[in-house]
Image 1: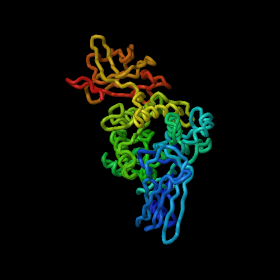
Image 2: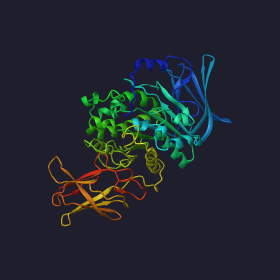
Image 3: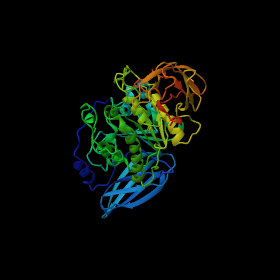
Image 4: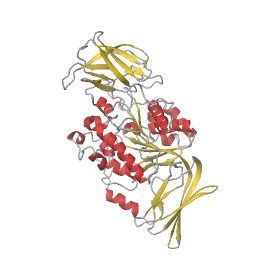
Length: 515
C-alpha cells in the first residue's frame, strides 16, 4: 500500500484560516485553467469576502456572456449559481466585491465548460502516470490533450468537517509530462487521467478531473459519521488499529471531513472510485453496507451542496479489486469483491442504482516494482470504466459494459455435470480445473472443491462434477485472491470483458439463487 502518512492537522486552525481574511477570495479549488460543469446543470462558484458586501460575477468571452449578483451573508461566505453553459471556452470569469465604497477584484482566466469527474480512493487511484505500463509514451502524449484539465487535493485529515481544502497538491493545470508524473503515489492519478482522456477522445469537449485520494486508507475514513451510523459503526476494531504505521489515515471520517466535504458545493458529472484493499485487512463483513452507504451519502451531499445541480443519483463508477498474492492465505479479497456489489455480483442493482464497475481480476501484476497489490495496467482499468460511463452517464445503450453473469444453474445428476447459462454470448478463453468450485455440504460451513470446465456453447459452460453430483448445494466462480493469469480468465464476453466473480446456493423448492 502507499507509504505516505500525514499528521492530524489541528482543525480549529484550518477553519480559522478560511475566515480570517476580509479580502475577496475564491474557495481553494477554483483557479485559472479549470473546467466547470456544463449544461443542463448550473456551475457553482463560491468564496469568501466581507459580510454585507455585494458580489458581481461576470462570465465573458470577447464580450459579457452573463452576469450574476449576490450578497455576502454574516458568515463571510458567498455562493453564485451560473446560468447553464454549453461546452466550450475559453472564458474569463471576473468576480467583484463592492464594500463601503471600495472594489475588490479576482479573475479566473482560461476557464472551460465541460464535464467534471471526481476521482477518489487509495493507492491504486493515487498511482501516477509515471508508474504504469508505457509511461514514457503516455507522458509524451499529455500535451495533446490540453482540454483535459487536472486538479489534485493535498493530503490532509481533520477531526471535523472543513468548509474548504486546507492543502492543494496540484492547482488546476493543463496536462504536461511533469504534472502527470510528478512522483510515485503523488500526482497525477493514472486511472483518473486515462479515464478522462478516453472520455475526451469520445466526447470531443472539455473534461475536468479532480483527484482526492490517499493510499492505504479504509472506506471508513472516507465516510461521514452519518453514513457510518447506517452501518452501526462508531469505532475501529483492534485489527484496524494495528495496521502498519506506514498506511494512510484510518480514523473514522477524517478524509471525508478534509478531502471530500470541502468539494460538496461543486457541480459534478460523476465519480470514479478505486478502494477496498485496506478493508481486506480489517473486517470484510461490513463492506456490503459501508460502500453502498458511502455512495448514497456522497450523492446526497453533492446534490444538496451544489444547490441541487449535481444529479441526486449521479453516475458512480468503481474498480472491483484486482489481485495481490498468487498463493492466497484467505478469501478476504474475494469477499470484498462480492461486497463491492452489495452481494449481487453485478451492478447496477437495487441497492446500487446508476453505478458501473470495472472488473480487474485478470490484471494481476506479480512483478510490479510497487508491489503486486499495485498492478501497472491502468489503461485497461480506465477503458473498462469508460464503457460503464458511456453507457450509464451518457446513455449509449449500444455499449456493453459488463462481463457475462449467469442467469441459471442446473445440476445434471445423471451426467455428473453442472450447466451454467449466461445472459449473453460468452467466449471461453481458457479451460481450467480450479476457477469453478462446488460446495458439497448443506452445513453452515461449506467445504469447497474445484470442478473442471468440460466444454462450452454460445451461452453455456458445462462443468464436470464428480465431487458430489447428488449433493451439490453451492457454486462459485473466481473466488480467490488471484483467480486468473493476466487477461486469461476462463470466461469473457465478445467485447473482451471478464466475467465477474460470483457465489450462489441452491434453495429448497426454488432452485438456485442467482442475483
